[in-house]
Amino acid sequence: MLISFAVAGLVVTGAGVATAAAPGGVYDVKDYGAKGNGSANDSSAIDKAVTAANAAGGGTVRFTSGTYKSANTVHLKSNVTIQLDAGATITGSSADSYDKPESNQWDNYQDYGHSHFHNAMFSGDKLTNIGFTGAGTIDGGGNLITGNPKSGEADKILSLTRCDGLTLSGIKLRRGGHFAALINGCTNVVSDHLTIDTASDRDGWNIISTTNVTITNASIAANDDALVFKSDYALGAKLPNGNVTVNNAKLSAKCCNALMFGSETCGDFTGYQFSDITITGAHKSGIGIVSMDGAKISDVHYRNITMSGTYSPIMMKIGTRKRCGNSPGVGSISGVTFDNITGTHTGSNFSPTIWGADSGHRVADVTFTGVHLTVPGGNGTMGTGVPSNTATDYNPKSIGTRPSYGWYLHYASGIKFVDSSVEFGKDDGRPASIVNNSSDITFDHFTAEKGSKSPFDIGFQSVTGYCVKNSATTSGGTLRITTSDSTSTC
Image (tube, rainbow, N blue to C red; front, side, top):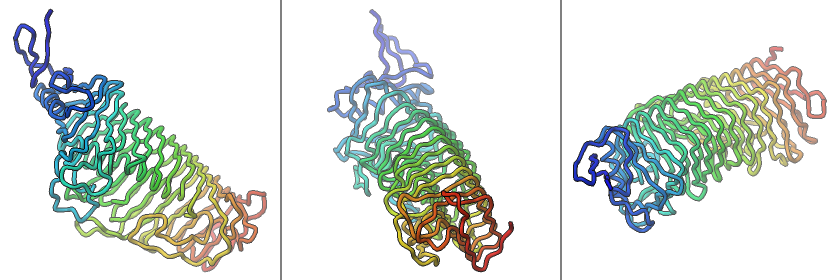
């Protein structure tokens, strides 16, 4: 019988004749010494298989059913796909033998976890045509660090920088420490049927300074942020972001944000399409868009999204943290649409908010069509002045209790609500909406629930050009409008 096995890019037959492995071949890690028994350290065997596939011009490194402990960082190489068969699991280790974090002269511009990439179960830099596919699992096993790791400790499963051509499909990532997946400076990313479970750890997938991304059928349950788009200065430059499509996703975030831009926002973002997404919890924002570090965020579109259990269903804010190199100015948010969005807002009373930095940096050109939100309510009557704000903080709580139970707009321009509504779970003494220091604001076929003790339903304060038409309370009554230093356009 002829027996063959692969060694370092060669196929050695039972007759002892060695020939070069063809590109596109399959490299079973067990042929390189992996045991797959859950106790032996298989990292060296995995690295050898990756090197062999790369040396042959590319191929698939295969994990058949079994449990493969990996106590050292696996160094990914170009043109190599990691394939995890059903029943195959790669697990992390508590041996503190992963690569130590590299030095980074731009550490001060982002959190520690975003600044270092080597301290991961899998890492790679400047790679092309790489992938993780199949039906198996990579599980940190509770051994990855959620805070700042010490030397030898890993804080992420997958860490990739400056990659071109990444496929991340079919597999499951569990217990990733700080991040299940962190990619920075990449392009041409495709993901289908990816599952991430970091509900006991921190972030799901951070996509940073990355362009040309298509994500379909994702399921991400995180403790911190679930699916988040960022742009930082970890690679020493302000890099572009955009041309992104996310379709048919299920997201949840126990403590933080489900679908988010920021908070790291150095480079500009443009061209995002989010559709058919279900969000089932976020103790910060269900949908969050913040520009904190000078980024221009534009051409962003949300369609067919259902939210439940969010503390802040929609939060948009321009802040002035400016934590980015090259002396960033104040950023912008513009050209955003929301179509067919429903949300139930629970827990803390963070009203849906649009907040610009100042009169020269307004959130602009945002249209809500068929957006129906239900908030907790239950507050009494309060003053209608502008709440406090911490301009360097992106969290919903950075703005004080909004004087409206529903939409609160401050420094906004060109905002339209069409065929939309806001209601409360418990009677609330605040108005449904207040608009302050803004221009060109339209409520068209807008429905608002009337609080039994609220002084009015919609208030305009120093607004140039407002219009309320074809709108009513939930009981069919006329909306009570109050204005101060404002002008109407209808």
